[in-house]
Length: 131
Image (cartoon, rainbow, N blue to C red; front, top):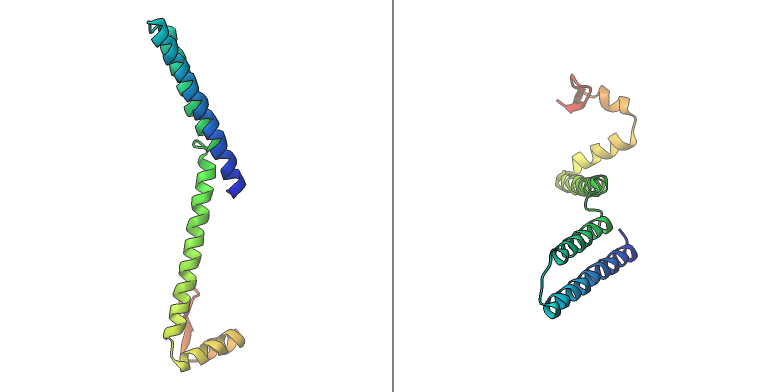
């Protein structure tokens, strides 16, 4: 959600609740000056309050579970990606010079060269493993 979208939503929310406050003020003034609180006042107040609440929910997409799930899925994926990069950087930092050299050779060389050495083998699941 970009900044202008957020500003539009905030502005619309202010208008909704401002209109709600003015309506409630009008209802209270008719009750005070009319000296009676009728059923119509209660019904109008309830309908306006429900409309303000639902309008705010529609603006902020409270019921849109797809939108919230996609946002949370994106943030989780971003955090996992960031975590895996940090873990990889930590692992590379902790490697010895010999291990780094072997890694460079593995990354730049042919895979068959790595598989033919006695130091590495292929596990039952097909994963390259150090023996």
